Image 1 (cartoon, rainbow, N blue to C red):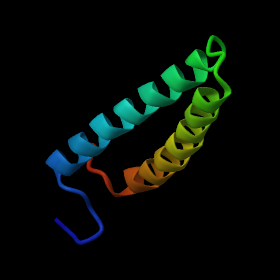
Image 2: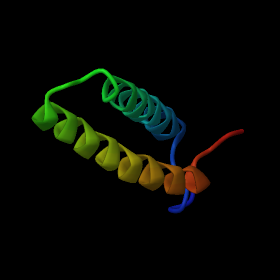
Image 3: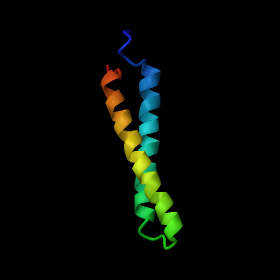
Image 4: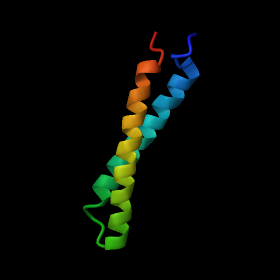
Length: 68
């Protein structure tokens, strides 16, 4: 295994984290439509923005993952 590759368990961990982040993003985005409290809505929007950044970072790591 080279330095520029993730181990199989790291690839699986990254995949699980990506799934959790994606679900959190979808849930926050959908719940914004039914939330009336502006402070809570702003907090959910912040969560959406942070999740998008996290997902983009994880997607960049996919080039180092083992798939075979």
